[in-house]
Image (tube, rainbow, N blue to C red):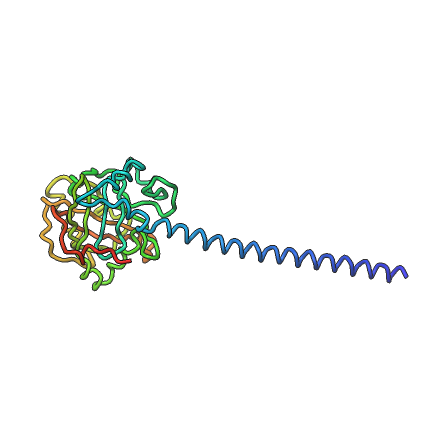
Length: 261
């Protein structure tokens, strides 16, 4: 009788433990599912916040820059607007005393993992330097500077030749002349505001020598050039750089200027 009672007690304990294990297993599955849904939601939120369409209302025009001025009131660090024609790169540009803040702060001044498109802290916001560097995160879905690596295809490079850079109340052209797969620690490229003419020529020659694709754009030391830089997935420290020279007037007609969505 005692053995039978002990056996029944054992069955009850084992059954209880099984139910506990089942409950814990179910709970873990639910937590994993919830985490998965949260990750999807969080990822979608980051990409949605990085969409250039969010800033379109503030885009300056030759006729009326009031919206841009409103953006500057919300965030005084905004000073320019960059557009690479026929791409999704159509964003306000910010400048700050360091190159860290806008890695996770958007152009409206809000915390955002997508960050903002920003000019190197050592560059002049009037683009008076011989060479300036503008950075942006490499993101999927063609957001921010995610489309820069598309220039790694020769046909894409050949068909995208122009952009514009709006600053100091005027629209300027951007003639794109070289695409360079680079290393983040390449100081021959990531040197800001090169001054002496000899060094400027050497800098230009270096761009052309390291470029995967380039075209004649009559670039001289008397020009001002801009490098658009983003991360590349090809290497750990890989970077993709698109070089262009600033021109007095924006080139191309309405087709060139269109930002396709």
